[in-house]
Image (cartoon, rainbow, N blue to C red; front, side):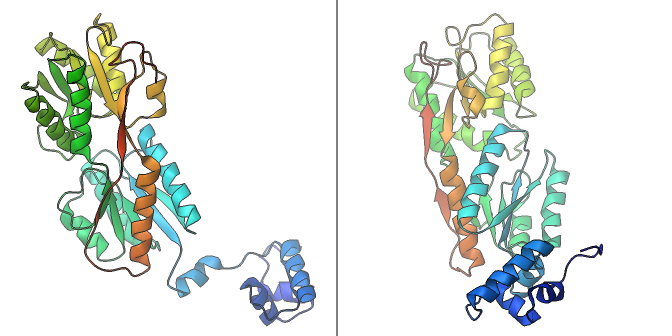
Length: 340
């Protein structure tokens, strides 16, 4: 075509020598079209590069087969892993996924949550940090919402997560069994901000109490990244120089802690054993590799997509709390000679 306008269904019909109703039947894959006629129409569609108005048709049918995934920060490799797993889980169920980043501040997450209602999505998978249960329920009154992760207490909505308290107990118990007695936690939020450190501190302190130990320190991390870990361990060594074990709230913090310990002349795991959380890819390739909590990310994504699609399909009933598996991956940061 020489015209700048996009081809229409009538253009396809004219080129194929059929009525526009026949083109519609072919587009909708109806069976009342002869094979040779169908072939002519498909050839005309390909020649003209005709695109059906699929979004509009889906909206008329009340379904877009699209979901939105809201995560705090795509710079964290864990969320990149989660996004990939949600994409894969949604694809096999016939859904596309759009990603919204909520940012690291309450105002940013509030903006992200409010923007969801401006678009035509069937449902939302939300990993909240700051959004209150009241706001989450308000959003869920408009479209199906499933929550991911630790910061979902009191929301009264479908949630999918690992058992963070149990996982924190297990990884702390691992340090205790390796002979560590002065164990600190890096990633605490004493102001009560809803971060993963909150529930993970609970399991950490429970494991120490069961072993007759007290925390060497609970170290605040304003940001859950490498810089936050390096700054945190510097404060820790100043306040508790005899620390011999550190549980970090995620692998990025643990990476910064390794750097800070090395800068301070401490060996890992000789002087101090270090653990992380999330099992991001780099955790296995650091020197030493980081012992970590590994959530079953494909199971997490699959359960979240299943729950939100079920709600989209009209499933009612009480909300569910789905707990997916995790495992402890032991590496050289806690056990000499272990590489993976």
